[in-house]
Amino acid sequence: MAEVSIEKLTKSYDGTTKVLDGVDLHINQGELVFMLGPSGCGKSTLLRILAGLVNADSGTISFDGKNIMSLPPEKRRAAMVFQNYALWPHLTVFENVAFGLRMEKHSKNEIRTRVMESLEQVRMERFAQGAVTRLSGGQQQRVALARALAVDPALLLLDEPLSNLDANLRDTMRREIKRICTERKLTALYVTHDRREALSMADRAGVMHKGKISQIGTPDEIYNHPADGFTARFLGDVNRLKDGGIRPERIKISESGGKLRATLLERAFFGDSCEWLFEVPGTGKVLVRELAAPQRELGKEYFLDYEPEFLIPVPESGDEE
Image (cartoon, rainbow, N blue to C red; front, side, top):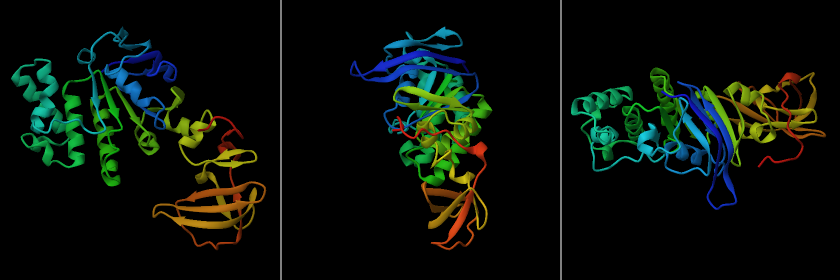
């Protein structure tokens, strides 16, 4: 696994609009880093440049101190797992996983050993001789991951690998990918727009906005101490109060005593949590999220309280799109 350094990486497809605008990023050996952001922010372009599928306009990429910008994709040892799996339907599971190893001209024995080891890692060894077309979406994604693992990549690249799966399967695969990255001590860059994936899995996560990394840090750092209004709102709901912004789960509801007097407007129950919408005079609507779901009366006046340490500086106006 490699230590990866990216410096001043730029890319424009039309010669004017910068998809990547001077991106700097360092990934430690064995670290799982997430890059998240809205569509068009440049995160997928960053992956494709690292893989060698797209050329950057300027900047450098180094693996363990060696500049790999001039190397073709097959020489970089940056294996990519795509959103749509990119498996060959006419090949068996085994042959799909073996494809990269055959391109590297490994011996038959080594190919068999590494393919089966990779399939065992993703718990798909019993399907080795089966057709990929008969597999479920989750199973196909496991095969795509095994194919990437088989070549022993210096850098594993994952481009929204779970977006085509249903919610329950996403939860399962999220845990599996985290387990595999930890067991293999993989250096990995994972691109997603799903903040739940990033916050639950990442060693560090970065938020991209208009071709730049607006902030990078541990999940706790970027969620609880966002650098700007865009990052704060992209990572979760924020109530704008007179003295700053605050997450809905940081507000406490009581029938007497608190910083804000509020009228209850709406209740939404989600099974594992409950959301309450209040109207606060002079402030507007305030959302509160609780794990419990006690009985409360719509139209009744309550009090909302919070600790000042959880306030987030959110600008009144500015670039938050």
